[in-house]
Image (cartoon, rainbow, N blue to C red):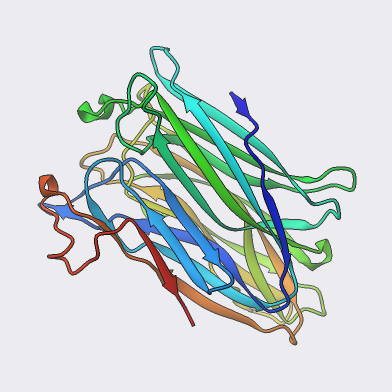
Length: 345
């Protein structure tokens, strides 16, 4: 089903250092008897507080406990760019078919009458099961397909957020865990708008991998204009689709990596960067699954006078105690929390 959620856009012009989001790498760390413990994906956040220079990170499992050090890649740039925040609220409902699924597409307009180029600068996707529906089991999903895209503006229309979210059951019917009938979602997406003339090159990455192999990657070789002395890779789409031989495509997942590296400069007017796009889950407990992942990226060119700084990976800490999997956060020296705020210098 196609949904149009609530829209709230806040526009600011920043004349100081702007923190730029370059993707995330979130992975569960707990082991039971040496084996990984994947989960449904619950609420997840990788969002920048520009005013306080904080990274807000959320990573929640479905039911069982675990701990993680969710990482976000950051850069800072001294530029007067426009930012916008889009908020979408929507719900889904599982079909009554023999293979139960919920398919939702949200299209949200972005105020961009000037036709600027837009890129993702962090997000917060919260979710919870709707207790008014017949089955409610945990605030997490077996997400089978996810795609978040910023559609480019034209001279006659504003830009658009295009979000696809599909969920279903696992081949083993959740290992005894029910499939929630209805889920409620709230997405906050931060967007940066820049002049199209700053876009040196765009790239479309489509990768095929497996949940059991290393995260797929691709190196992009971008050309910079003669006036450029440095480049900044940014992201305006990421997503995945799971494909297995079983009718039910849902899987418990352990790692999500959708990120770009900083530029390296093999020549004066070129920028090489690597795109990582993939998911992982342990082979011993997961049905064989092909991952089809995608990312749309761009390199913004900057003159030498622009202060660009690579911050690198900034890690948060989340932990949920659970005696059923022999995990006590205090014993691990970790705080009992599923959201964290981290400052960087």
